Length: 252
Image (spheres, helix red, strand yellow):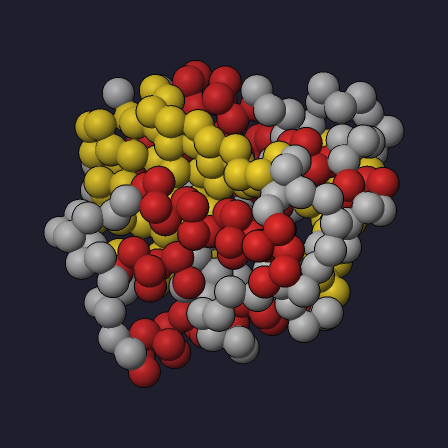
């Protein structure tokens, strides 16, 4: 389940109107580590799946990669296109859901999906993974980055109120061994709050789904909350707990 239309625009205001400034915890512990892990290279064909306003796409294009971006939200893609017109990096954008990618088989060297699949149901996640496998070349790389499952657990600072960068409240009465929906209230560096419905996926969900789709795991990493990230975004709270999760895989 993803935000669309006016809701999408409002909840992603800080990603677009403020340019490419880093304004939320996910920028520091989600997006930047993802770019480093994927390591897009000059001449590679790379897809930013769920590109939003194009932050990840632009960063990858600056490496010399040929970058494509797609997103189901037309308003976000239009913002990305407008930025591309002002400062061309050769990025090609399309309006498309990531569960039905509008690209050819074996087209890409790498696919990045950052801060997207928390908005997707388990079925949608699996459809995207299958599509990523289809459009990747042999031994092509797929990078997925999501909020770490720990932040949804009852004992996490995001549930107990001990931090103010995000608050997660369960919407489904299910055990934490199952995929389920949460309400998320996210706060940026200017104190503006954004609320949306997100999906909690247990820690073993993505490794299992990726393996079943024909991917081998190259590297997994957990990004722990840091004092520097909190201070950069004007937040307070404990540090040292799992906050974001990235997994790099290869098509076989």
